[in-house]
Length: 135
Image (cartoon, rainbow, N blue to C red):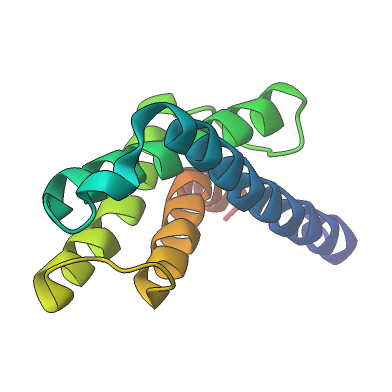
């Protein structure tokens, strides 16, 4: 892969990552209308983290899947690895925040870390496959 193609693909990956963050926020908003998770943010923080993590990872995976379908993301599909990477990336920071703070308050920086790690976790299996096939 030449430098120009690699640079273009990095820009596309960054745009897809931003779209994944937006998709996660849309799914989280929709889930908040149905689940009303704020009612158990203080009373059942583990359940709150579970619901938020599920909404984050669903939005990340749906947006990433769409990017794969329209061929914005290159590389092998590796669906299970991508979903696993997104789940791991989302839940590890949320569980660390839960362990450190006890409850996860609005505005906690671990939400941002969780979103970014989930989106990167979704995209990483495509990078590994691209490195092996071109390296």
